[in-house]
Amino acid sequence: CRDCVLSSRCLPSVLGRNDIPAGELRFRSSTLVKGQLLFEEGDRATSLYMVRSGAMSASRANVYGAQQILSFSLRGDLVGACSLHEPRHQVTVRAVQRTALCELPLDVLHRLSSINGGVARFLRKALGKELKRNREARLQLAVPRADSRVASFLAWYAGALIERRQSAARFRLPMSRVEIANHLGLAVESVSRALAELRAEGILEASGREIEILDSCRLWEVACSMQF
Image (cartoon, rainbow, N blue to C red; front, side):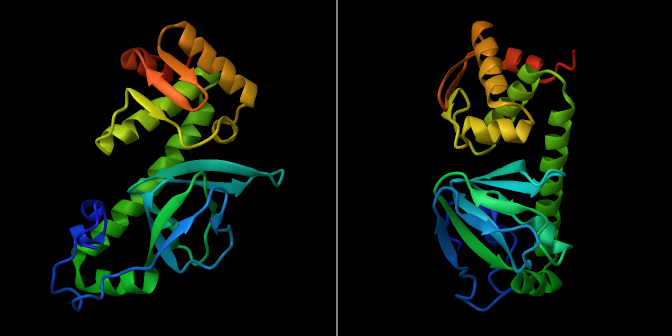
């Protein structure tokens, strides 16, 4: 684990070498193909998961029984943090593209947190980040204009790339327009029209999942707009 490129974002960043026996910090890794489930809403929660590569979506059944995407998790994100205070998962999580994960068993995490305050803080931070992502997603749905919702989503993704020290000027979205539309509470056609409007205003170029941000300041202005 200490040799992993994500060690600074994961448990090795808060664990001392003497916290656990040498060689014990080796968690099971797995790879999911696009569309494969990690866990479903109602499943018993036994682990958290670190996204090593790829992307995941978290959804929940709405009042009509359809799955509503609440949030996306990217490389370096911890998935399933709500299981720290709930015995069963509250969402359904699946891979939106080929995704590699490390599984962190809850019993091991609870044992480590009892002897290392840094682990407890790490877990609280992970829970807070997951709650923040869900809160921001609800705020996106409160914005009436489709172009503002789409701009807000793109601004979030660009910010996530910057946080990971990647280029936010030109990128390929891991999620489809259908998934973005579901997440934003819009029709797919509305997402396409919003992208066309942003393109017409010279804010970005869009071709399929390929996005080039031409004016990031203007993108944020549209993202923050609450006009009807």
